[in-house]
Length: 253
Image 1 (cartoon, helix red, strand yellow):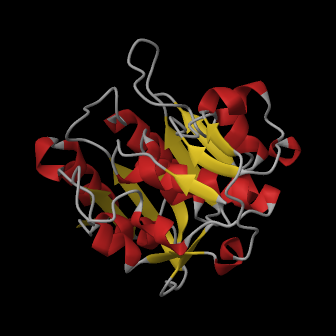
Image 2 (cartoon, helix red, strand yellow):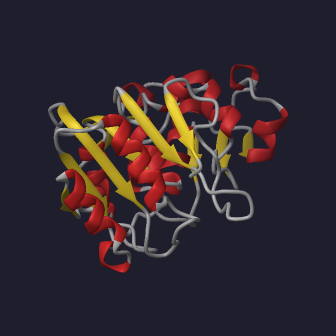
């Protein structure tokens, strides 16, 4: 069986750990509890995470609850374990308790990309949107550590969208967002975090920012175009998740 234990980080980090737990469950045919949908937060509160919104938007693939329940031996899984042996299929069976396992490892994400995409399912799938979904992280982190005006302009000019939306939690802290929306006729939106991930993943084109949250939108998406920002040298604060993923365009502008 698999037990996730991360009690740090915001929504994107916690989702990525749950997805990593799902990979372990798939590859070792081990039981992943439906209760893990609470992201290590059984009280449904903590660190600004709207767990209620998350569990009303997504559920864990039921196939992951069909694996074997093994309680012994207890195996503490860490990122270092994964780095030493990327072949999850070769791990011994046991009760995996994820300790300090964030799965923010580009090689792991590249190897198990399809498995990561097969853990969370939408409760109410959203129909395909033909336009562009643009995301900005501005607020707690600012450009150039987050996506710049030049990055957004470059991507939007290449896509030349006929319509779409610009999503940001804190749009008022940076004037570039309103300017970009006006220039490309984009609707500025702010949805609850989990609902926003699902909505964003439904678009044909994605222009994403740095950070786990934005990456999760692209990970769950079948978008035709995926641009993602990564900070320049000296400004890095997150992992370059998409650096070796086919179909993803990582830009530093």
